[in-house]
Image (tube, rainbow, N blue to C red):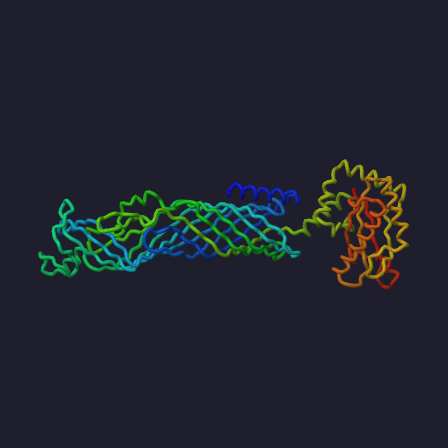
Length: 487
């Protein structure tokens, strides 16, 4: 299973790295999470109940590329659990300080409950993958990685009642009396058996107790998944589900040497009993003093909802990537800001960028000069599309044929076909109409024998008119396809 997980992770990383140009970004985050946050253990007797809590943290993520990021942070977590015992039994020997008598004591606990609480500082190291799910920049993300939990404090609180009775025994553990001693039972040497016996620890008592628990480092396997909401150029909100699974036993072995009794007799004050935590003590399985630990090991389990606010640098988006690439191409071509290649897909821009070596650009500039000398009007646009139409009209054929012949003569020549419209209609409608006109011109040239991969189409819609749209003649001039030589 581990090998499969590693193979899938490496595969996703390789695919995303190939598909996207590597770029670096930085993201700072704060987060809160809540849900199941439990100390998990199996009991040999009694019942275990999960606890609820969560964690809060801060962190930093570095984007390796558009899809992948690595992050590190610090978070403060709270975990808890509860153990319940309707009835619990324990037995042990004790010496009364006052009388110097040796007793065999039996305790029967009733309605005993113990709550354990643990506080950790976790150091998460997360790898996160994200992919677009909408044009607004919202993304789906998944994250995996380890966390190292450093224990800060762990405590237990117990409540319940206990009834204690017992017998005098000799040094060999043999009972001297036949009747058990209780707060109201027979004790022939005492004139006031109720008081005397309670002072020696016999009778019914509250079993409330509290104390500390020593825990070890916690090694956690963490995973999360959800939606990353784009809130603007410098902010994003992650909302998703998480699960943290503790991989190791966090109870310290030295504290579970099983020499501790669940109830401990205090020979300095016999009526004041100590109750140890079930996590580091043992109980009597029967009256013959066979003993067993309550639990063998404990780990952590957390799962629930996580909300993370990220800020700092601009989040990635497809449009931003394309614009950055287009700006780079614009600078290389020395064509100024009047020819930003908006509308070209990421794949097309990647193809252009791959060919932006100095040698190729030198060859392109030489070819461009040759074509300009042979035909100065090589890049002349085709004009006069009908309103809201993308059909190539007959009067456009001569101009297209000239471009076809020159591209056949110069097989290394490539072109961008840029569609334009008049100002009637919405920006979205005209963008698509301009793209359809560019694609129609491309289809004509491909049908005449020009390879499709030598022609790239894009659209400016109604954003770049060459004449005011005050009458039909001017509008027809704006309904055009322009041609731009490219490497």
